[in-house]
Length: 356
Ligand SMILES: Nc1ncnc2c1ncn2[C@@H]1O[C@H](COP(=O)(O)OP(=O)(O)OP(=O)(O)O)[C@@H](O)[C@H]1O
Ligand SMILES: [Mg+2]
Picture: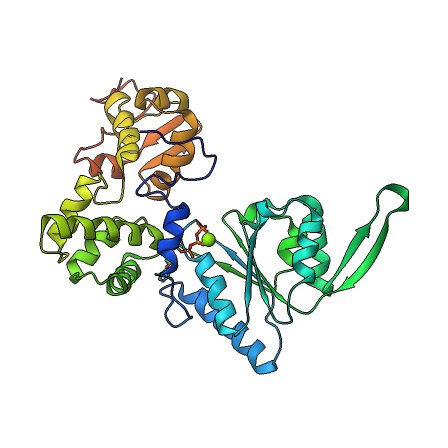
């Protein structure tokens, strides 16, 4: 399989990858919750956001700028649209990479209506000059439009109508502090609990006209890596299987059999993830082993192992990155039905069974 050259945290072709390609975005639009009440999970964020929006509405004012930070597929774009809907305001959608020059941003800002929501996706990927223009726009609802070049250039101040900026980022750490500080409210989106994903799956199944029982939903939820996007994607694959191989009704058995076909295991690991762990355990006795050696053993690029497979394995406590190399944790051994060797007691010469 070709894992693509993407430098993103994920590859779209991967069934358990957290990012979405173009085609999928269209499918997703149909599954998006439309208001806060429909939005599942993220209790804290929902409660806080609800207060921010209610207060603004009560004051008849434009809501504070909101920063949504969290991993791909957790609902940032969805929430931005909900914010606009709750404020009964129009929404303008753009992204950091789409804004090459400060002028691009000035054009967008100056055409906003009062109260409009500007959704700036991947805000950490905006250019420096645009970023600086944004500081002033956020704080003072004003931009300086530079006319001319060189020594003759002049800055013409332009008043903006009050608007709400909703920024989204998967990498909050990359935002310069002056930008981060200008948001009135930052929502940190967490991975979802299996029970929440079950609700997401039931809701989507309903919208897609798929019959599913609770055990079927639980089976899919457990393999969805805490991510609604993955849950929805797996549901669609399971639906196909249920239609072709059964009567369309999704049970635990059907969900399990369908996802076995797609090589997504009970914890949501795919072939790549398992390949990495298996190499670590079977070839290197559980490690520690260097990243390059491990990558060669699984026949993948170093970057693929490090950026595509490892983050989830680390998050799940299956793999540890240590100064001496990668190590399979006892949970990883258990996942394959194996017992880890007893930890070598180091120094007294005692060797464990699996060593070397
Ligand atoms: N809390 C939720 N309840 C129900 N469905 C959700 C929820 N969060 C996300 N989803 C669904 O998951 C899919 C992905 O969500 P969304 O596009 O908002 O993620 P994102 O955080 O913007 O991802 P990215 O970082 O890739 O832009 C959507 O189809 C949406 O319907
Ligand atoms: Mg998004």
